[in-house]
Length: 477
Image 1 (cartoon, one colour):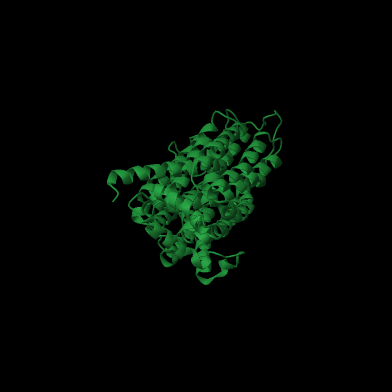
Image 2 (cartoon, one colour; image 1 turned 90 degrees about the vertical axis):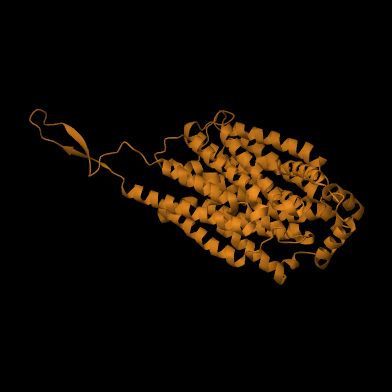
């Protein structure tokens, strides 16, 4: 029987493995929020590494944010095959390569087109690493800590998000990408090669002796390894020899895929990715006293805090309850932000010049304000507070949980392929939500956009209660 101290020691070793696996996600997080640093920087100084100037329209700025999700589409599709054929560990190494090339292109960019190509390649890394790293963590973690282990990926991603915004204050946008190159090089050359292969993958591919050695290391002496191997085989035997992608249309698999499609749709159209990529732009229209970069750092730091809090409670509270709480916070935050924006736009006061015929000075003009003079007190802190509440809400559920459930919903034999399809659809939706940010704002008005996000969160609460299956504490094979 395993003692408490031995179990803690084993969990500690697993935690180090989770951190090593997720280290590459620091670079992914940097990529996701890098558009904030880019947008803030080019407004002041649009010079490149070589001293030339770079021009960027609103449509191209939308593309800078959304291109990473467009690039993730081939990344997800390739990863579905790669993770099954090459294994989880070496797939993470391969996933780093397009990210390295993309960051290098951005560093040396002479035009916005080079930036967009670099973002596309970073997106390919995002897709490939998303499937490989999350699948690996689900398969090596004990059931009791699997949820918290999965959140480590999001936590490291938020570390990267905060880092890129903090680095964006002293550094130029292209210099920040050099840091990303260094992180990815350490990840693929030093950290990943030191990790063992996933034991469930070894079982499915017939390498039982290797699987036993890894399982003894991960599960400890108190677990019957032979029985564990037997259960893993039983959970995967129906899909063990699947060829092609036809299994995705099996009734139970298809139902779970559709549930995840809906969950990603709700997450993306409650502004999950919009907050990360466009915080600086969302606050630019308000009379915020704080600098745009500092405001973006505050919002991103709240994302980190929310992920950390979720790491502590997810396995105790469960996925469904966390998601409902998350969506409630988003509903309130966006409703308040939309209402504030609506009334602040209605109350905008335009100065009117009135000529006064005065005997002493017949040509003098005085500037008057219709009805209300400008007040000394300002409510410009409200948009930032609302976005921080929305960031807290999405980081506690709607952001991470669709990604956590994607590998948990499917057995090992088909996990990488099924997950890649679900996350592929999620990335298409994320691309659409980012690319439609400016058009929706123009069509619905800024207040209408936030109210739309709020309504989507309301629909998401009902959807979660009706359809979402709880996986906390359950074996996922």
